[in-house]
Length: 124
Figure 1 (spheres, helix red, strand yellow):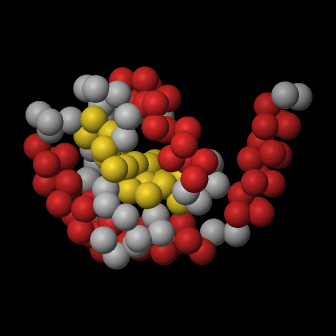
Figure 2: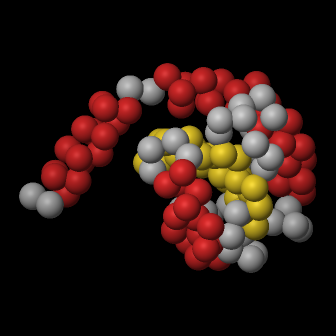
Figure 3: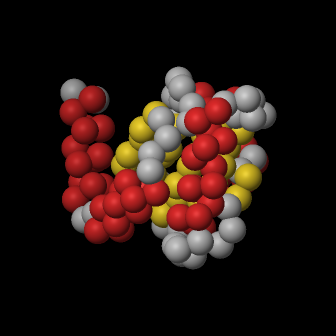
């Protein structure tokens, strides 16, 4: 799957139709974003079952706000509609691939339970 330049109106369909989604929040004027872009695209080619999405924070301010992006680039890993990792700053290809391996090995039943427990605790 090629890297998707994600627009706000595509967001719901993208997370509904992909078990794993990795977001790269970036901007045209951001030097580190430009350095990380080719790494993101290169790694995406190794994982055709994962949706790799670039989000231009200048054009998609609603999505940047939803993910509380404060600096760019910011990388966000989402699995089964749950954000499991978010990190500001560019990362090397090896670290990105290591993160993907960890993401793929997560026990999602436990993650869902942890989220449910946290939400229950917030309501008490």
